[in-house]
Length: 292
Image (cartoon, rainbow, N blue to C red):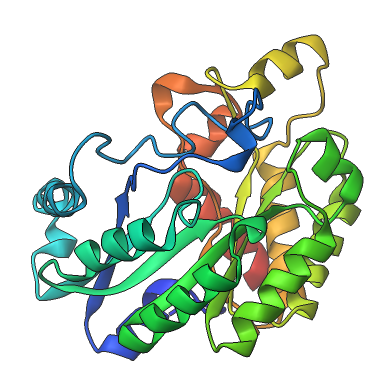
């Protein structure tokens, strides 16, 4: 048992069984990639969907993800799944298309909920009504890409919206009893520990249900890679990162469900930091620091 609330334990308590998230490519794009925009500075060509099965139907993707897990002994038991609409902006479409795709996922065997990753500027009133419908049908949470509460950083990474937009979206979702998760990154250019802790306090102040934390990693297929070559900035060491995360967990004080403490990157695309590939070591170091 962890000393802080984590998603896997929350799901076991909620469903009384093992629950696994299955990443899905919903075939969406992003408003930050239209009209000659090129997305957030750190975003890859796949919109962080390196582990999805692009080009397949949603139902086929779910079956392919299940098969991918079959050889892992931990999954050879009675389990169910959360369909995770992961890459790009998964509310950036018409209500009709969104309803069709969400419903298709929910109609698959052993799917007990949806996780939808999106942007706070892509949930209008119509989409909010749809999310209310889905929330009444199944276990739902909405993941919102904050990255940092520092407005200067948001401008540098070309996030495309200000904190007021984020706050309004979170408030609207909460008013409709929809769970929210903030995605944040430690190690963005020019940020310090103070920025990371301010972001964590900011997320906590909004009363969000969950949080995802990971270190900035530079992939070779991103504009961030070109930016780093031209404008080198400090890359966090594993010790620096794990220290910042352990202090952040103390700030959260068990008030949010922790969905992630480190990120995933395809090994062949990773430029820096190489230490991020060893997730177990990173998490072990965080837990060790918390136990001191």
